[in-house]
Image 1 (tube, rainbow, N blue to C red):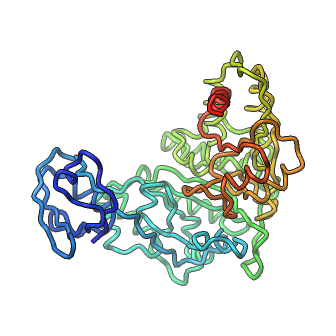
Image 2 (image 1 turned 90 degrees about the vertical axis):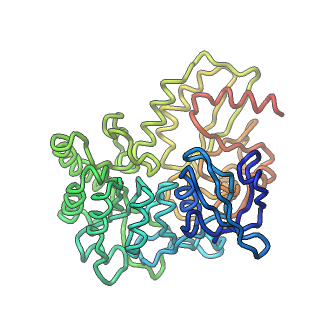
Image 3 (image 1 turned 30 degrees about the horizontal axis):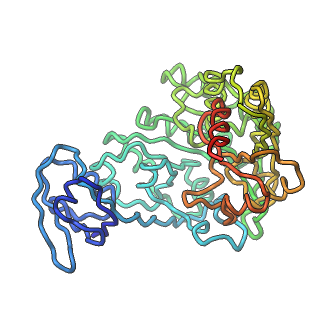
Length: 432
């Protein structure tokens, strides 16, 4: 049973006078636990819907077009918690005093399907596996890290073999597409362990469509946690060459490279970002695998240097340390040719988590403010995507308005293709 929060105007539910606050009990005798159940069981042309209204159960017999939504908006799903104790878990590396939600470890295959969240499947039940197959929750994104049993147990902080490969076999045999991730820890799951892991995953191809490899990230808040270290630039270069040998073999065997290093490997190793061919279909771009290449290529395809702003505009563009060099070369330099546009690209060192954390999405407002507070910021401050959550908060609970008030300059989170930044800025000028 789940609470109805809103009714879509003009919908079947509105015609039937179903109201917000009513509870959805079942569809076709199937209990409804969440939005995914609703979406799946609602798809039939004839459905029997049981609603609880003021303590009374009411049956509605509905005929509709196949896949037509009857118009119910349902309460948010409660996240399933993770019981692992991964040695590199970012939650454990948060400083004290942050909002409660940032200390919650989720392990929810439903969010993996809907939003691309990674799950380990260590505690997934047989009933959940059957539900995934029945409701075609595909693709899913799996954090594997290692298939060598002792290494996997160490990395995930679990005490017994969790039967990962058997679960993956069941899902892929039943047509569920999986994409996987390895967080690479120097001296732990590289070398022979890495080869075993990738080869185990290759056996499921095409059910397992890709393996993303990302370097470990460690904050300064690791007191009393398992001692770990990050890769050196030389080790990153060695890993790039090591993986490339395997990629070429897989390309010949499978027709795709199968294994893809995240952008962070190349940037921190001071190597060029590969061409688009490296990433095949960009299977895991939201995981930072090919994100820079896609951004650069889309920018170059759409950028028109003949664009002009109606009046002189000075912009301070904020970025994390990781992106600074590539943004300066491939984005800001061409944008500087736009008439009436001046951009000052400012990298912000992450003091909150420590300088080894360099991605823009983990910047907090305090660090941004401290970096910018003594600068001439011009007309507007541009902030990178993902610095705000869905509720409009930075990781340190500041809002965009808080930052604007402190800096005394309008702040704007840019989205989409930066080739259209001149038009975005012009629209902001008109609106102001």
